[in-house]
Amino acid sequence: MADTGVVEALLRRVEKVDDGVDSLEVATSLELDHQVIVGAVKSLQAVGDVISAELRSSKHWELTDEGREIAEHGSHEARVFGSIPVEGLPQSELMKLSFGKIGFSKAMSNKWIRLDKAHEGGPRIFRTVESIEDQVREKLLLLQKGNASQLEEKEKNELKKRKLLSEVTVKTYWIMKGNSFSTTVTKQETELTAEMITNGSWKEKKFKPYNFEAMGVAPDCGHLHPLMKVRTQFRQIFLEMGFTEMPTNNFIESSFWNFDSLFQPQQHPARDQHDTFFLSDPALAHDFPQDYLERVKKVHSEGGFGSQGYKYDWKIEEAKKNILRTHTTAVSARMLYKLAQQKFTPVKYFSIDRVFRNETLDATHLAEFHQIEGVVADYGLTLGDLMGVLHQFFTKLGLKKWVEVGNSGIFRPEMLLPMGLPEDVSVIAWGLSLERPTMIKYGINNIRELVGHKVNLQMVYDKCGWTDFTFRM
Image 1 (cartoon, rainbow, N blue to C red):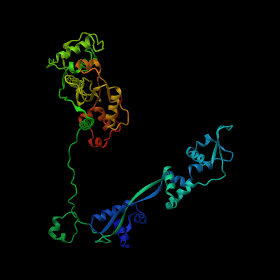
Image 2 (tube, one colour):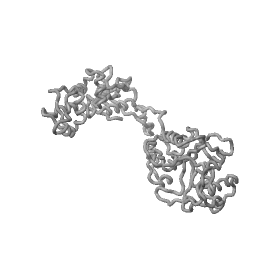
Image 3 (cartoon, rainbow, N blue to C red):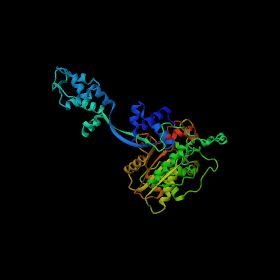
Image 4 (cartoon, rainbow, N blue to C red):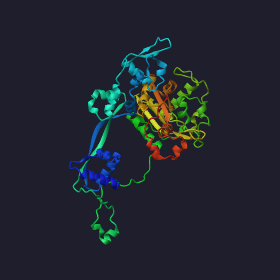
């Protein structure tokens, strides 16, 4: 219930009139904030038909802070004119004044002053008229006194354009007597107690009506993990762009599909135990498409398809080693090989799943993370197509600020042609981690916090909106 004194004062005002009163006028006459009267109105509405209140909206013009300053001291251009003595004033001196830059431009436009650039002592400003009339200030004073009707709409809009005036919408209540009007309000009971039933006092009391439509207290519930929430958003974007999700349920991969099929040499440092987890059981893979394996071996060791290769002794023993996949591009390689075994049709693939790296654990690195990958195969694709797809993809995330989160490019012929894809087919691809944009989006600084749930989830979800997430190529 609002303050009893305010409520009774409002009721006495309503009692004196038959056709109602305006809540803003009541607030002004009682020297109270309008919201205090609004609170009293809502309290009275809650106790029954004491008053009727109709919500109304009205617009009026109001001076901005700059407008009030000009109404008090004069417009910038008038103050510039008043600052220039008969003998003139160096332009550099005028520009030191707080109103100098804006006032100079307006005064020049009004032809109140002139600039002599060839003056002996440097550019100097002189008056061109003896006196001026500060119409801007006069208009603002009229508005300040509530005489907005004396100005044309064009004049008001000009002042609004200069940010000296703003149009404000005011919502007020028109308050009238209700069927149960009274100048005193008895507090309604909210509970029927055992004592009331025993002594019979409930018969004399007024009870507040129950609102059976009111919502109950929301039960405590869980939340989606930030990673899963962002993963769902990425997946939806891919699907909206017509991509098909690749099967990524094989965390264990052979070195052949993870490295060799991508034309990565066997002596590459990424294949070292310092970067990759190797399995001890089963340590080796044996099931490979033999003809394709031979073509991969040849392009590595001897070259082919216009490439000289790496010129080294490619070993099947290295290709057989089982590992925890270091990227989902191994899945992309399998899908592209499968595509090459049939009549080619353009495709768009994506995947979002876990990959594993033998990283040194710290605040920003774990031994596993989620990789997002997009792949497009079609005839004659170029970097321009890649840039176009990336622009569409990241625009859907609300691209506003450059943040490095991933890589992109075109697969090499040494990877695609041994698979059997047509020579005029190109494959563009890009990849990024899921954790990086999630941390940017939710303001999480520590990877352990992200994975270990050690975050204030309410704070996290309040920060929704892709204002900080972009892609750098």
